[in-house]
Amino acid sequence: MMRSRFTHVARIALLAVAVVAQSCNSTTAPDLADSQITPPFFTTQTFAGTLTTSGSLFYSIVVTQRGPVSLTLAAVQAPGGGALTTPVGIGIGTPKGTGCPRTSSVVTPPGLASQLTVTLNPGTYCAAVYDVGNLSSAANFAMRITYP
Amino acid sequence: MVTLSGCSELGPTASQGPGAAAPISVEEFKGTLPLKGVLFYSFSVESIGQQTFLTLVDARENGVTTEALITIGLGTPRGTQCVATNVRSVKSGGSPQISGTTNRGVHCALVFDPGNLTSEATFHLNITRPK
Image (cartoon, rainbow over all chains, first blue to last red):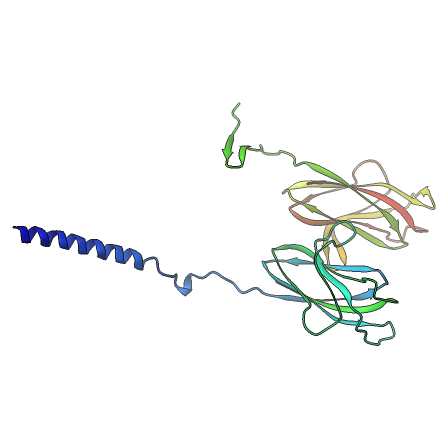
């Protein structure tokens, strides 16, 4: 009689453990198929123009999904065509009034690799190029803007 | 009359009924428009589905109010421009000349000389928009 009752209790305990174990199994990491992360599609645009001494120019873009926005100041040239290594300012902000107030910026010479990258939410932003006082005369520039 | 209201951890809240107007803001866009030139002004809107109004309050050539038609428009900044979806050529006056729905986001108002000016003109455009 005692043995029979013990066996019954033991069976219930084992069943409980099995149920708990199954519950734990159900909370393992989700299958790969559950992932809804979509890799962003990037757009690249070239902003080129002539920057005057102490001047500032900007280009507006629309970011459609959260992701990295990169600026690459690819070239600065004298009006005659000679390449310059003069550092100028580049930055990212939101168009406001007649300008582009910058929230991130860097002063950099032109180069092949991106000089400024920030992660932005969807929305309208502006990429600016500005002279910090280094230009002695107007200069042509080309900047690549890559955004999702 | 029943008014819906509630409380959150941030304090009491009250529902806005349909058609409730968002607070408005008036921005003044002033400048000098070159012959056949175009200038624009960007602004941000936080509310949804409210109207923005443009009024060319004043335009002067050589200090004298001009009778020339000047184009004003409402749009969104793209690239180096303001891409307008709603434009109209107007003389300066006191009442709104353009209205358009502006949803949450960045918008722009432009002023453009289509070739009617005989000299550069100073202008004053009022942008009445939801906050």
